[in-house]
Image (cartoon, rainbow, N blue to C red):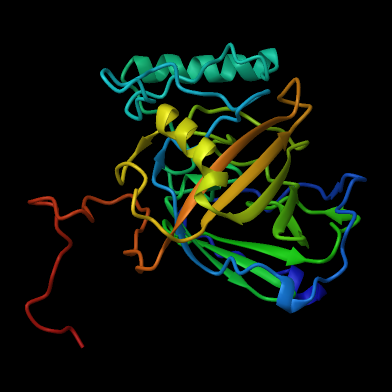
Length: 309
């Protein structure tokens, strides 16, 4: 098991970075129920799931929620994805964090695209990682693996075990999971802060070494997903259009809680709703180059008239 916990992360970047931070002591709170659930009763989350929301977080029905966009599209009133101006007055933010969000918004209003993990090709922390429109889940008894549709990002969740007594911060943090009835619960700590663009959303909302994320994944019917989808329709633009009215499969609902006493006054919650996608996604690479991947005239990838080998 120890060998599995020390997998080598290959990052294809031409930028050097420090080898890592000092090990941290994991929070005292770890999942209470670490007993393995019988295979027959484990919900099947395997397969490809897609959400298509931009920016992406769905605010909760009540209580503290994520930073949202002050810029709204004319006519629809949803978040203007082309102008990312975070609500720095959101009461969840500590003053220093609010100042970070405000300054990022000022840059966006000035027409400046400020750097983020996704537009500079850096690994994305949780919950920024939910930005990916598509995700594939692979379930094994000892490990759950999440594959994301852009930049070949892979997240591993170690099942039915607590966080180590000392955790070395990593790109996606140390994630442990267990099943509670029909729910998959994932607990993540120790996400690297010594990284470029340490933020948890597109508005530049910062986090600290105290970041603690708990996610609950459930397969639900429309009745249990409807309220969140309606809030999501009011808040986010869906790149793939509205939710499919003819969809007849289960929805994947993810309720998550964010705690970080270094950046936030209080824990806050948000929701993601995924639809099952039975098609394979096209490969998407993040790289600094002069070529496009979207069939833009004059920006196609180079092609050889005959094979080079």
